[in-house]
Image (cartoon, rainbow, N blue to C red):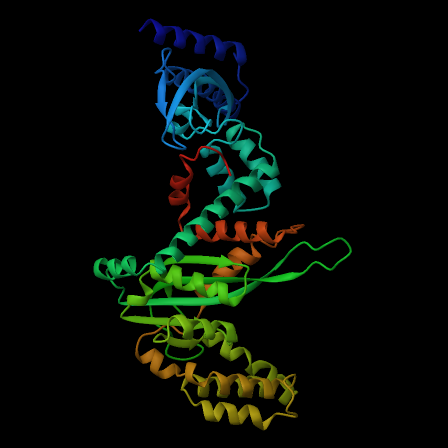
Length: 444
């Protein structure tokens, strides 16, 4: 009780000394925040001191080789925490076999000397996936009173992106293990109906000095379930809700992305689903990957992408806007009803050349190549979704909202990792990744 009274008296003196006559409640709140920061610093320092015993064991098992490590001395370390920089001392051992040193307290608590603590890294990365690093740095200091550079936010965000890479590598290793696949098949609860969707966005990356900044395709995929039905007519109200969405993203060739498609699909038991439906536009790489890894899936060209080919044809064919609108309404209804031959014939009627830069010829080619993916009456009758709004939203939130912030120029590895971290955040996986990183000995 004496200690409690002493702390209470100390706090009272601090409040009086700092602001005896506060100007506003906001000033009082700011002062209390500073006080709590100061108290947190003291408490965390004292806690670490208490956890580091005065008398230590002479020997410890070496975590590197399993040999015998011998106590050397108490060693100083500095932690970058939510309560500022904290210096602490803990026992330090060196192995007589492999000659590597270690500190048991660091390993026990996941302490990271001279680096961001796991909690600082978690919050810094959380801001880093939301907006430009410079903006996140200012927000971090405003809320925590801890100064972090934009480079530190970049480092934290990329560390989470690297953690996603490691997790994806584990998934891919699992798909190569026949026993694990069989065990998953025995234990899993196959989804009744699962959707997959793929698309690509553009991200500008750095080039060598004097060269043009290249744009690279950020391939993105989404797994999800959905509720609701498409409207009765093409112009009706769409009320579809995607659920349990998980995203994955990468900048890589299509073949490598296919491995991620398969590995992430196994995690969602896509290969065991009673009904598996894929949505996408007409990109050849998308349907090649779906056919390779999930050949029994239903393939559907997104309704809105299919309709996009009609507007240029109408503008080319008719100068009068009323005629354009009437033609579009008529042909969309044919497409909605699955009358592909009529749609193709209507577009071909207005073709002026065989070149693909002719909008009508481009439409003919598109509908002909994707004929098997446009049986919209059957899809609607089966209750399937025919719009890929979920993946469109993912592309917008990853490739556009985060990766295309003003002034951003990414090197390839940074772009990949930040995109992966952003995808994990949008998939509500941040806390799971934080748990994986919590007891790491050193920040990435």
